[in-house]
Amino acid sequence: MSLTAAALALLAGQSALSLTVELPRAESQDVAYSELVAGQDQAALAKLLAAREVRGEDPALLINLGAAYTRLGRVHEARKAYDAAIVSDERYDLETGSGKWIDSRYIARTAKRESLDAQRTLAML
Image (cartoon, rainbow, N blue to C red; front, side, top):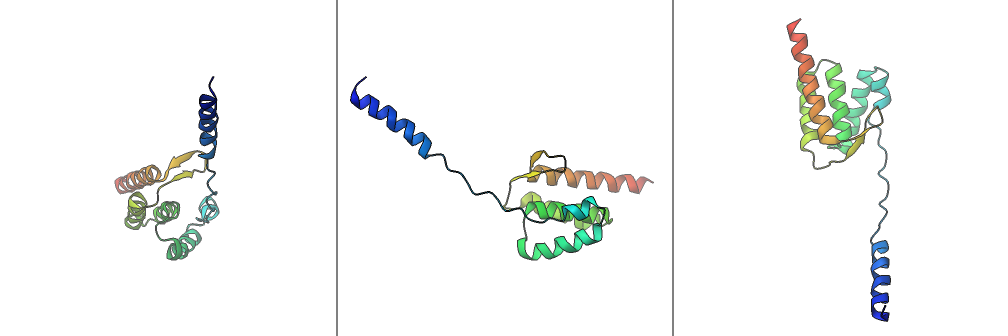
């Protein structure tokens, strides 16, 4: 192998390593998960509304806000929160309660659909 070929191979290998960049971990934000799990929906709503003043369009916050509104029977407001999460400029994978990582827009669309289904079921009773 020529010296030039060896140098290119070495540089190619180094450039691949130098392109690997470790991104800083995203900060974990309080999105009233513990309140929702404990069934403290009013407390969750208060915490989420206060957090929205600071982090307005955070999908995780909006999805949990929709969940709190749904549980409190405020379906119209829940839909608005889910819609805001769907169209948010921020989009990322979220860890669900079961430990799975799922796209925030997919979660918001699914939650909105389930909220509407629950409303229809209650209307039939």
